[in-house]
Image (cartoon, rainbow, N blue to C red; front, side):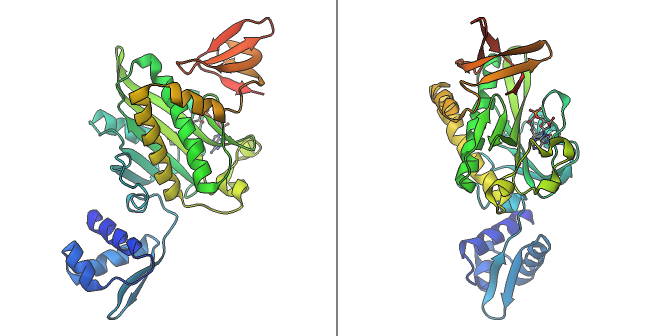
Length: 324
Ligand code: BT5
């Protein structure tokens, strides 16, 4: 059922607004006219506008801004990331679902997407606002064969991919704030949450949570974050297709990830530094153990932030919030 609907949508999309005859659909998908009709009505229910004309067939007029499996599959290309998509209209957190899938042996590159999260999470038990129909709320399962202490490199890799994807889709410049924030004009437009399933010293799965504010308007953000958050729509003055953001993002991640596994962190580190917002700036790194103020000097091979305080002492920061 779902496969057929997806295949039908692909056929209609390939034709770019031209008619596809019922006969051709029925031949290529090996199904009856009645089955086609059923799937057309389902697609219409999902927000697709499809014209049906006697003797000419079907024509796709508009598609919704959805992150359903069928819509996202139009943008995933021939990579392996995003081949397996789990979509839910509303969830507490896509991380929870992805963790369960990973425990059940999901393949690398599997993704979980939701239109809305009611309990989206950030780091350290903080909340991630994920209003319905506005953003990309996604969890990606990775299974890298790397030692545990190198896992933070993945957050930086994903940050590079997210900032590149935002730029490709919207043309808006997006900078990285160590370790996991993507900023546009100094405001947070995306966040990354990297969680591990590991035993002893080996990684079983990495569950990468990515939240990107795509089509929010200012009123979508609560007072608490109104001053610090932004979206692609606010910055770009237009809305964007979330499914396209997902497709471009998965392509960027997959490319960087293979580069990383083959050649190590070197190239990623250079890309990261060229997009980093905080380097060379005077910052305060705040964590549960206290705060250190100084100059952000760079990151190490491991992805650790180096901070030089006013006495010239260089501190290695493994995890903290950065203030300017
Ligand atoms: C993050 O945490 O930035 C990680 C966000 C990861 C979200 C994704 S969505 C898909 C997946 N499923 C989940 O449940 N989570 C992941 P952190 O650095 O701790 O930042 C959290 C802080 O950002 C909050 O305390 C707010 O101040 C702010 N914030 C919350 N929602 C925001 C939003 N939509 N846009 C910008 N800032 C936000």
